[in-house]
Length: 289
Ligand code: SF4
Image 1 (spheres, rainbow, N blue to C red):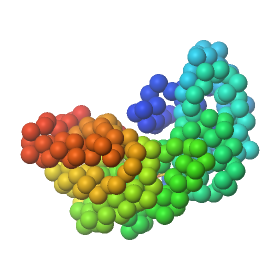
Image 2 (cartoon, rainbow, N blue to C red; image 1 turned 90 degrees about the horizontal axis):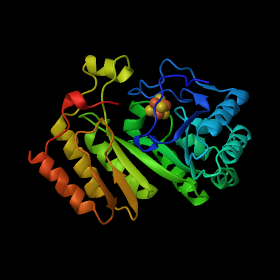
Image 3 (tube, protein in one colour; image 1 turned 45 degrees about the vertical axis):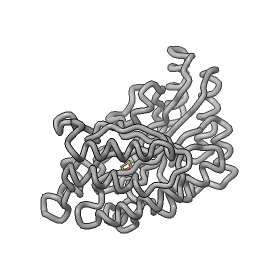
C-alpha cells in the first residue's frame, strides 16, 4: 500500500525500509511542529501492515534496516508491535535493526519486560525528540512528554538493550528562555547519556501555533549568531561518556560531527571558527525541515 504522506524520517534512515505502522503522532501537540497537523493519529490495519512487509520482502529480501513510521509508532502496544517485528524478522533474513521515533511516554508506559521483548526482536534504536531539557520551555511549546520522563525513557530503554538517538531543537527557548533552554538541556543530556545526539535548528512552520505566536510578537526566534552561541554553550556543558554527535539535518547552519568525549574541543573550535566568520554557513535558502 502507498505510504500516507507526508512522511518524515531521520537522515540516518535514508536507506531503511519505511514501514508505516501508525499514521500521524499520538501526541500531535507541539506548538512548533507542523508535521502531522493534517494526519489524525491512527494505527494501521494489521492486514495492511503485513501486506506491506510481504511485498517489500519479495522486492528487497536483503533489507537490513527498517524504520517504523510515523511520528511515534511505539504508541501501539506490544500486542501489535511484537507480531509486526516477528514478521519483519521472518521476511528479511539479514535484518539487523528496527528503529522508530518515540515519545517519552511510549517508553515509560511499558514495563522493563515489555521493552526487553522489543529489543530481543531487533527494535534496537529509538529517536526521541527531547527538544529542550527545560520543563518551562517544554510546557510553553506543549510537549506532552516531560523532561524527567524523557530522561527516564532513555535510561530504561538503554537498560533493556534499545539505544536512543536524542534530538535537541536549537532556538526553542526563543530569546527570553534561552539560558534556561541551554541549562536544562545540558542537565537532561548529561543524565541521559544517549548513544546518539543530534541538533536541529528551529524553523517557524506557517500555520503552527508557534508561527502565530511569533507573528503576534509573543515569541522571538534567535538569530543565526545566537543559535551558534546556543549550540556552543550546550556542547561546552556536556559531560557525555560515549555519544556520537551530528548536526547533519538540513535545518542547521553548520554541519558538525564528532564523538564525545574525545571530540568536544574540536567541536567547540569548529563553532568558534563559524562564529568568527571563518567557516561558511548553510545559506538560508538551503535550509529545510
Ligand atoms: S511529539 Fe514530535 S511528531 Fe508529535 S507533535 Fe511533537 S514534535 Fe511533532
